[in-house]
Image (cartoon, rainbow, N blue to C red; front, side):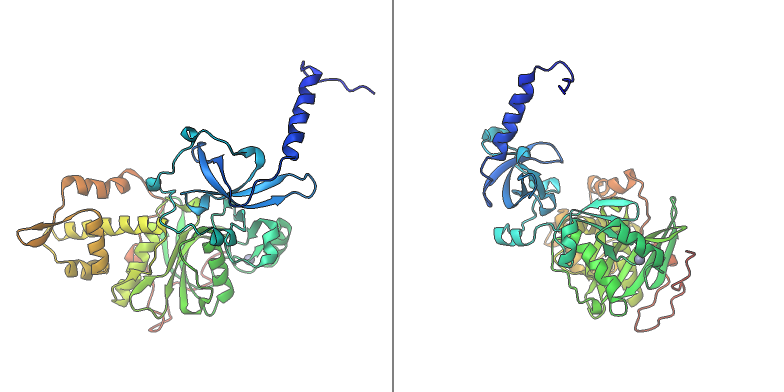
Length: 411
Ligand code: ZN
C-alpha cells in the first residue's frame, strides 16, 4: 500500500536528509585527546573541548564523546553526540573561558591521564523530590556505574540502580532522620531545620554514603573513606515524613586546629544560606570547645567563596559590636574563634590592611562596609546563621547527653 506523504514536502527532501544521516554514520570517529568545539549549556557559546572518551552504541553504531571544556571546571564535562560537536571552526567564533566567572578550572592541573581516569561515572542522583545532575567522579562500587542515575533513600542514604529497588527499600527502611543525636533545631520562615551529629565509627555505612554523595559534587581533595575519625554534622529540612538531607560538614575528632574537614550543600539547596549556616555552626562548636578553629585546606572553590564571605561579615560585625575601637587581631580571634591567620587573610584579600606611620592599620571605608554587607542585606536567605541559644551540644568526649535525642522526631 502506498503511504501518504504528510505536509507539502517534495519526496526528494526526505531522500536528501537520509543521505546526509548516512554520511555521518560512516564518518571516522573522533580521536581521543583531539581538540574539538562544542556549545556550553550555560551560555550557548562555542568553546574548545578535549575528547576524553568515546563510546559506540551497539545497536545504532552512533558514537558519543565525553568532552572536557578547556579552562572550565570539570563539573561541566559532558557526553555529546557527533552532531553537537564541530571540528573546523573559525577561531573568532570560539569563546575564551572567563577564569573569574566561577566556572573556571581554579588552577587544577589538567593532566589528561587523570582526567580520563576520573570521568563522571554517575550522570544524576535522585533524592527525595530532586533529580540532581552530578558534577564529578565518585568511588561508588563499579556495579552501579552501568545505571548512570542513582536513586537514594533520603533518610539512610543507601542507593540503588533503579526506582523499583528503591521503592522496595522504602517499604522496609526504618529511618526517618540521620542516625545520630539532634543537636540543633530552628524554626525558619519556610519550616524547620535540624542538625544531627553522626559518629563516623558507629554509623560508618551511613557516613560512607555521605562521602559518596559529597564526592559527586567535590573535586578538590581526596575524601577519606575511613570515616572512623570523623563526626558528621548533617543538616536537614524537616516535614511530616521526616528529616531530609540538605548538606553536611565533617569534623576530625582528633584535630586540634581544624574545626571542619569537608563541607557540602546539595545543589538544589545552594545559595539559600546553608553554607553560611554550616560554617557558623562549626564556629559555634569551636566556641563551646573553647578552641580556635580553621577549616582543613585546600578548600573547594565554592567553599572558599562561602568562607571569605562569612569571615568578612563576622569580623565586620565584631568590630561594630566593639564600637569601631582599635582591636588587635588576637582580640578579634578571641571573640569570633576565627584564627588570626584567617583574619589576616580576609583583610588582605579585601585590601583593608595599610602601612601607615610605621604600623599596619585596618582601613574600613564606607564603600567596603557596604560591599561586605550588601549581598546579605539584599537577599533574604532560606535559613539564618546558627543561633547559639538553639544549640544543644557538648564536646563528645565530655558528655554525650545532648538535650535533643535521636528519635525525638515524629515520622
Ligand atoms: Zn533508607
